[in-house]
Image (cartoon, rainbow, N blue to C red; front, side, top):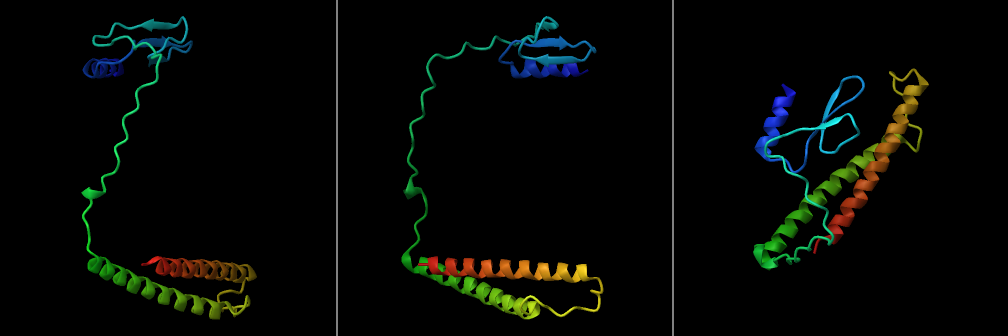
Length: 155
């Protein structure tokens, strides 16, 4: 069945090389486009043609077409300023929320010694929570820095 599907696929797509059936010592069949020893037999597949000879010269490079800036819609300055103002407002909102979150995390962290909870009888659970808080504070500080950079980049 596999052989019929392969042959049909090759005939329909007109293969670009010769097809060999190779059988190893265990009797496993493999179909390939290169002969891998004396245990391979060239198949007569309709539509299969020999592979083209290697080129001596490299293929010609396509001419570089510059990106046409005129294809993009132009936005007038008033519209761009309005968009920038909206972006600044959204980023400022996100910055304020992130700074609030950072302040809450620092209060809970308590300079590296947060209060133990009732469910943290095991010291390893407490240490895990402290490490998670430390990671959250670091991530939040990086977010604040990134938001400030983004706001500074707005024209």
